[in-house]
Length: 351
Image 1 (cartoon, rainbow, N blue to C red):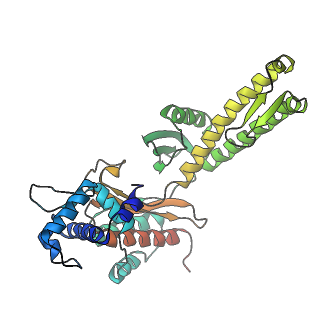
Image 2: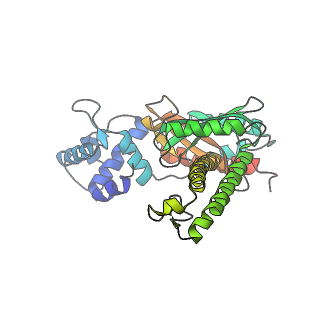
């Protein structure tokens, strides 16, 4: 997916137009697009054989595939991703805007509003809707972290009143299943009666306390010239004892204490970063086919957009689930506009 800009820059105008028309034709009627059909719609006059050669090149790039022998081509998941990221033209239609606006009328009670939004998105788009309620700031009873992919994880929050909320986030680089379990175990030992914000504050206080204790213990060693800081204040900071003979003069118990504090500091920093990432959640994205890690929907796409509170923090999301041949140019602005309105409605009195 990161290769999208490179692939687009490698394609000449003809290849780009052939690719775009194949994708648009497939999204329109779900059928493979053949070379003869394309020759009638391309901006330049070329033969069907020339178009077939271009389509074969696009197939070698992994952007198109032939579902049947001697058939036309349809986009692959990679091709749809390239189209969505680089060639999609999205614009909200006036009829869609009016239909969404009409949904927002009436009382702004969160539960009723989100129920109406879900129904409206399904009706307007002809697809299943996805509505995530606002994130709660309430006492938590239990927390778990579950790895989904190297760059994606799920946190499961069980609140004191029995409500369960799932949030997807990008874990810190290097996070492992064991580090996630360790973070969850430590948090669960502290969690009773506390909110997510309370836990963040507690971790920040602990990190600051460990930092002060390390500084105090290391001060004498550094002043006497027995040790020196490396990368002080950075994540990879270390306290280095100068020369093996200096170990005889150094306070060995103090060094052991500093080493233990560094271990604890690193663990608390990781947990604090976990909580920060969990609270911020994830912005809206388009998940195509097998990119859907939370659903067993290999042939489906999910278009999700977040809504925010007055402080611009992501508190929930709305979206649409449908086939991979969704009309992205129409669905994306519908979901985005709906999320903006929901955020405004739930943020307070209307102006």
